Amino acid sequence: MFYSSREHKSMIDTHAHLADPSFDKDLDDVVARARNAGVTACIVVGELPGESDKIRAIEKRYPGWAFGGLGIFPSSYAPEDVEAFRRLSEQKWVCFGEVGMDTWLVQDEEERLRDESLFLSIVERAKSLDIPVNVHSRNCGKRVIELLIASGHSRVHLHAFDAKPSTIRLGIEAGFYFSVPASIVHSPQKQKLARLVPVEQMLFETDAPVLGPDRASRNEPANIRLALHAVAELRDMDPVELETITDANARKLYKL
Picture 1 (tube, one colour):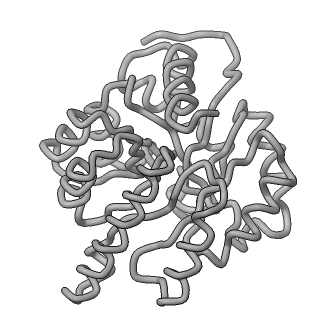
Picture 2 (picture 1 turned 45 degrees about the vertical axis):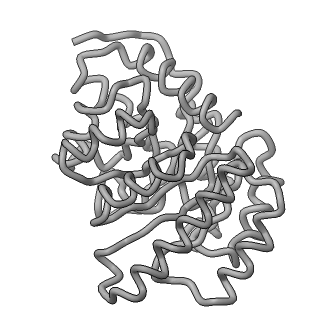
């Protein structure tokens, strides 16, 4: 095991829901703790276009630290949300996210086809704008990767990915990025992911307020350090070396 006394200077939380109501009362404190932990940037993803004003306000409140994504979560949207997403996609966003598919939540075949069609249209729009997609893919990782490969869009971030090793390798071969959340400290699946993904294609995330190190507590960006150290231990790496590589990955993918 490698150890280092150096402080971590630049960690990027590539997927956090800071517009979630659970952060309304103490967001300044949350961001201060993140900065004190070495988090120098945060991709603030959305679940519905209706969050866009709140996400823009967070960007304005923490300039150069918070970067907003335009999201539409599978299963939870209405036709007017799709129209709002299309309209808001004309604005400048660091990514489209959180977007994707979820065949665990969505059981109806027609709804699944609707989600797939919307996802494909979003990926095509992202490709035309040359921005990343920050992707949710619960219970349908292989299908999502197949669709992404077919689209030809290379700026892909698969968040909290859960699939067979063969499916993870398919995404690796396509050059996609995978983010590891703080829940790795208790999740064998995330530990498997962290062992398989090359560090040159690895990112870190919190998915705050969920997927934290403690299932009973609200997660927040400062906890990304726990994910970093857990992966460093699994990979037998110097944490600072790992941080340097994954920081460069995030800055390259998101053009920060």
